[in-house]
Length: 313
Image 1: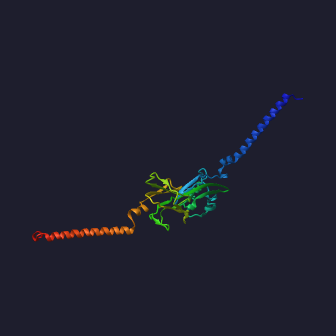
Image 2: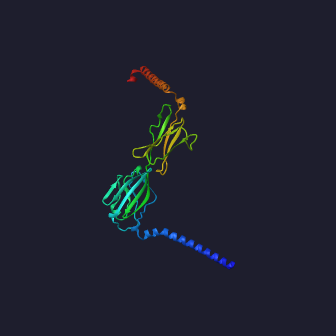
Image 3: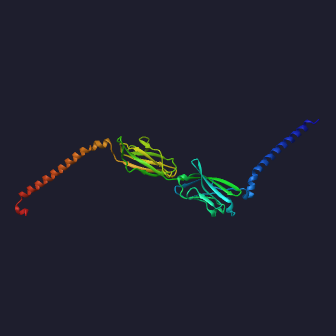
């Protein structure tokens, strides 16, 4: 019969074997996962890989853009067994942008191209002329070197600066008799934009944001995919400087437009009166001037009649 000491040694030995088997199993699984990577590294011809920027790329409206997609290394490629298809996913819809294989090539988006000379060097990069808002989205590069293929994804953001204006017809009279100024942002992209109003008065020279008397319409889409928006502000009856502030992702700093109005309103009407009163005052002033001129002339003629004839000559 085995002693208790013998049984303890057997248990410890069995435990060590179990731990060792588990470690060996983990090592084997790790090696199996690494094997495809090692195989691709040893023979890229049998396991195609493409490299892309892998980050959001930003371009301004009408810029020319290149979206990179390349095979690692610089080994000359046989273009007869190569092909490329570029896809764009814009607002949830994926469409072809460009494809080329053998003697066939087709641009589904005008101004899209892939360089044949670049293709011989393993460069599948897509070139776009004059990007528009419709070009923004997710680009997928599908490269083929027979019999292998690989894919990669990159993103393109398109920005258009808003054209900011404060309406020159600052006093636009509406049916309610109030007057408004109009702040407009035109031809911007993307759609999200913020318009706020600030004001300065004699009582508050530091300025403050306005929260009342503002009507901002929805962003209206233009035919080219850009947007327009208008904000109306009702003028107050005091000496005030107004500022329209437009904030958009394309602007490094907010666009600020100022407008200063003269004193007007009840105080102005009480001080100077109505149009009819002003006309009466002007008529009286003209009559007084005419009376003074007449009196001076009469006085001069009287003096001339009293002087001796020889002094007149």
